[in-house]
Image (cartoon, rainbow, N blue to C red; front, top):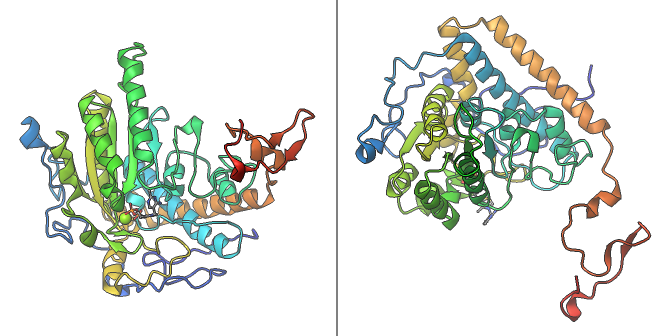
Amino acid sequence: MSTFAAVRTPWPALVGARSAGEKPCAPFVSCPAAHGLHRTHVRSTRLGRPLLAVSSDVLSGKKPLGSNSSPSDHAVVRREEALVLYEDMVLGRVFEDMCAQMYYRGKMFGFVHLYNGQEAVSTGFIKLLETRDSVVSTYRDHVHALSKGVPAGAVMAELFGKATGCCRGQGGSMHMFSAPHNLLGGFAFIGEGIPVATGAAFSSKYRHEVLKESNPNGLDVTVAFFGDGTCNNGQFFECLNMAQLWKLPIVFVVENNLWAIGMSHLRATSDPEIWKKGPAFGMPGVHVDGMDVLKVREVAMEAIGRARSGEGPTLVECETYRFRGHSLADPDELRKPDEKAHYAARDPIMTLKKYILENSLASEIELKAIEKKIDELIEDAVEFADSSPHPPRSQLLENVFADPKGFGIGPDGKYRCEDPKFTEGTAQV
Ligand SMILES: Cc1ncc(C[n+]2csc(CCOP(=O)(O)OP(=O)(O)O)c2C)c(N)n1
Ligand SMILES: [Mg+2]
């Protein structure tokens, strides 16, 4: 038996029920009566607005995004696809539960922000992408990295600050990056990733139109994920403008989990319906149930298709919820128990599981086998991270572009550290 056995907390309503080894965190009221298995076709939201509200029809006269489904016909997902979605969401959930255990055991440093509850958004979008497509994330980035194909061991080792991490242990929780997977980063500053994503989309268009590096299957697409609170930042608006002006192949995905740390979205935003900001810039805006991976996937398919074929950007607002506090250091005392219970009852993994079983896409035994496989994968990831070496000290100064006088590797190849006397004037570089 592994030293790091994946002691899985029962789904849904994960957070109050801690795994062995976890210190107390936020109280999370579970809702056993409602456990998970709700119909997924909830038609109205906390704002009383319809889900899948679409405004592109006004703009283009075309069929709006997501309009080709009715609540009863979104059942079209093949067995293989459903199992890929299920496995990816379970991977994200089990990985993050293990992160919490390892954080409270002191294996990770700094802030760690978990994604529990939001998996349908990452899975629904990223599993439709190709390797050549790019993903830009936030500080809540581990699950985006996993969905994009970064191995669990490399993500866990990064969290442990080890040399085998996807950023050689120098990025940590908030800065996952992997060039081979076109994961263009987690970002600690909110909104910081949106211009990077817009730049990646510009690069795709430039390579296609100017350098004539055409791909018969269409443009490389960038998907940018960010939160509701981030949508009040200027970079969001600047990038919507540029993306639409140049018809860039990008999808802006808002993970609206209703909270920005302890600030309620409804208190902080003049018009909380974020999807409406798309049409203000001339692009489609879509609002979708972010707790239902099949609905997310349907909207994602169309938005990615638009980007790929050169029709330009889309803004998608996914209504979702995080099952844990803002970070693992957050006591999560501001959110009301009934709000938490409402969303816990709509756990996206349980919803998909119910769907798979009801539609006979797979058996309970097959789903259990997937869960077991993921448990083992995560245990291996922790063993790998724990047994990996720390980066050498010399790595600290690699990729540091400025070398203020006094710091760095000296002519003799040895590390030197002299007082640069910053306070006495500008350092000579
Ligand atoms: C530019 C900047 N300002 C402030 C912060 C502090 N901060 C960290 S997380 C956060 C809230 C972000 O909320 P949201 O965009 O909804 O993302 P969520 O955490 O809900 O996923 C803020 C304000 C920051 N990281 N960067
Ligand atoms: Mg938020």
